[in-house]
Every structure is written in structure tokens, then in C-alpha cells.
Length: 210
Image (cartoon, rainbow, N blue to C red; front, side, top):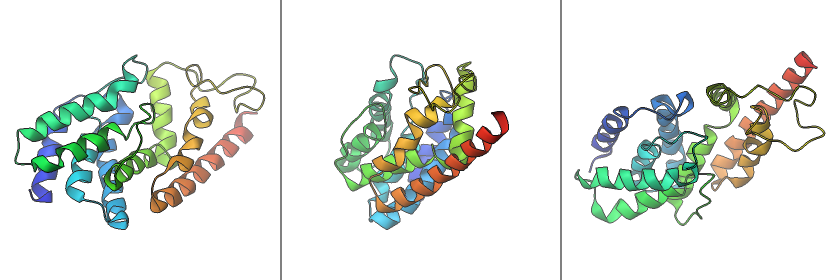
């Protein structure tokens, strides 16, 4: 299957499904695809697998506060393979796509077993960092009606972060941990650059609100 046709089919498929929230819309998927293209080049990964997985990684929408959240990547993997079986996608690569989608999730905790899965995981996590990461975090916090921050300790200086209660706590509970989880050298470099931007944002915010 040619890559242009693969991307066209996947784009059409995912465009038919409502996202879980505004931070996981089709624009998020396109950014993950762009990250995937860049990382696939640096890692010499199979683009037939990585692009299919990148386009379809969120094809099952599960809200952030759903009890099914930890299973969302497996549900998406199952739905993606079901869709691809109905096309001329090479059957021999379906297992690799399944693994790359299932393993991309932070909450699922699935071990990476292929370069393609490493690329897709890194590509998705990069979109949680940097300027776009700040915007997406605030979008999700607003969707869940969580206050921006703890009133007396906004930056978790004297307490453990709890992102089930405060939006900014998500930076400390998860987002700043992502660079250390990156599987590729190129992904880690970019993750560290983006995390530094987020640190600067919080420093400016501290100056403005304290």
C-alpha cells in the first residue's frame, strides 16, 4: 500500500469519529503524524506501520476521567486493526500496528518491543510538551472543571501533586516526567527542549500570581 493512500484512508476514518476532548482532536492527530514522520526518518522505522499507528492511535475516544482510560490504547488498537483489515493494508504488518498503538499510552504501561512502537510513543508524548503541551493541559483541565491550581501552593512546593484536583499539578505529576521516558534519541532531545519551555512558563506564571 502506498503511503499517500494509507494516510488518506486513515484520515477519512478518524475524521468520522468525535474526539474524547478538544486536546485529542484531529489537529492533535496531525501533529502526532508529523512528529512520527520526523522520528521515523531518524530511527529508520517502517513508515507503513508508524503512520498507520499514528493516524489511528486515538481512534477510540475515552475521556480522561473514564475508568476505561487505562484500556483506551488497547481498544484503539483493536479498532484500528479491524479497520485496516477492510483495506488493502498488508496483513503481515497488522500485529506491528496493534503493538505500536497499544504501547503508545502512558497509563497502559505496555513495554516497547519495536522501533515503530518507540517512534509512535515518542511522537504522541511530544505533543504533550512545549507550548502546545501547555495549551492542551489547560484545555483538558477546563473540560474537567478543575481549578487552575491549589490556592496556597500552586506549584507543589510543599505538597504532592494531585492532578485529579488541580490542572497545574499535571505538569508535576506527569508532564515533566515524559522526557525521561522517551525511547528515541531525537525524541528525547526535543522533549527536553519542550519541557524547558514549560518550566519557563511556570516561572513566569509564578511571578504573576504569587
